[in-house]
Amino acid sequence: MKTLRTFAAFVAFVLMLTACGGGTTTPPTPTLDPVAARGKRIFSQHCAACHSLSPDTIIVGPSLAGIATRAAERVPGMDARTYIEQSILKPDAYIVEGFPNAMPNEFGKKLSGEELDALVHFLLTLQ
Image (cartoon, rainbow, N blue to C red; front, side, top):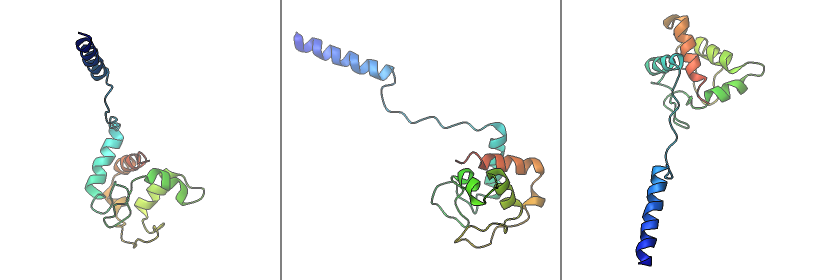
């Protein structure tokens, strides 16, 4: 009888843990605001063929994983937003060491001001 009570208590404990979320779960994926979501679509259309969003994955140009953090430190006195905008509009202004000067320089003509702002906004989410 004691064994049956112990077993019942164990089952109740396991059920309680399961119901309370005691198991391991993956953290939720952050939802992008509408401007960043638009920027992500623009990235997919214009940038993803050459730039990865995965760390240490090189396609043609450098990975942009963590670009918001790195951009703030690349040029003394320049904030991340300005660095990213300049790198898109004048890609030969700052060449990342180890990479050729191969980025197209027509994005200032291809993208509207709103599209550029959305793209930069998205890239600034990549901490």
